Length: 113
Image 1 (tube, rainbow, N blue to C red):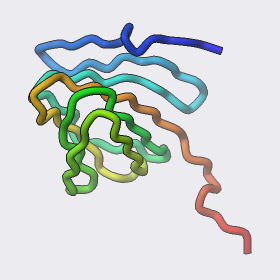
Image 2: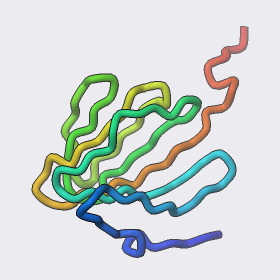
Image 3: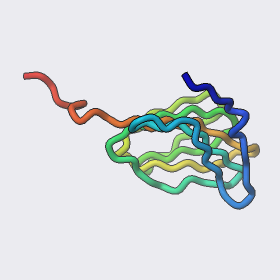
């Protein structure tokens, strides 16, 4: 077992968002992204993974494949790694995201015939 505090990785920078790693186990990772108002995570993909996200605090806009969705504290999001994903803190307070990237098994979409 390994235990970490989310408060210990609550670190903001006026220059750019911060990423603080919590766990890196095998091909999965869990981390926290911290954003002050106006900061953004640029559009990107994580091929071969699932992305799970919890908005810990604040609010903002998540864009997945060009579709904007407003999110706020306590919202959860899942998207596939082949989807183009970004986040922008469009709220009035700092925003924090708890993110888990999990490798998708190679046979995930293979069905028995």
